[in-house]
Image 1: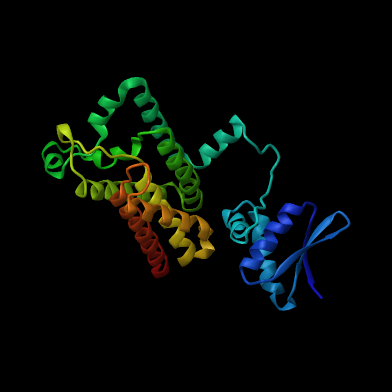
Image 2: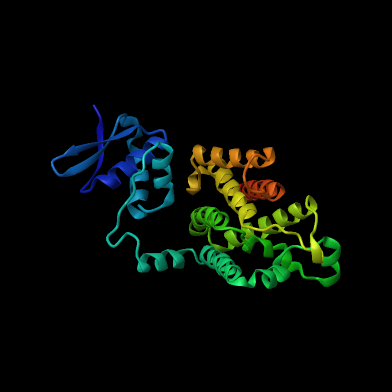
Length: 287
């Protein structure tokens, strides 16, 4: 016979907690009793540990780790606070909670919009990557970051910003703006430098590549590895998403896609994100 743990007036939080308990090797189900939804433990031996998790859930039910557990179990259960939905107010609130994610998002949109208005050439002249020999003379080191803000098509920018908006905000809300800033600066620099090594400059000593893809692969690798190394931190990705991104990376090298892929930038970004996650995990363990 199961052991009742806690009852909710709504179904969503009950299932959210039950999914998370199950992900922590504590088998739990949800049973409806009158107008209540009761989380029931299958094994009485886990009661004490389950109570601690339930108290943590009640103190912060919107923590991403609970939704992540639902995704990993193949379910999409989430809390629906009053006033939720697509509105200007909610967009602003989300932007405030992840300011650096929003700033990068808006800069990419602004650069792409100006490019559509005929200003691509002057923007490219100031942001695109140049050979290292040229940079050592003119000291325009911002070009190591500049290509991340340039996109060449609607599909290109939509794809990148969707992933950046989701994963960047996830990192920023969980580990803070400084951590996401470090991931962005390191991965953008390394991915653009790597792509320059494997590319040839066009006229005016400029490399014609750009996009946030290297950074996107970095934040993906960062969240992926932290989910593996530090699952208690609440950052993780479903295996299906990781698999999709890795397959997309391999297809780029196979050169069978309809677009030119910055393969070196993608690979360097992924590796830098994974290594940053490893370094952060190791550093926290020493502390």
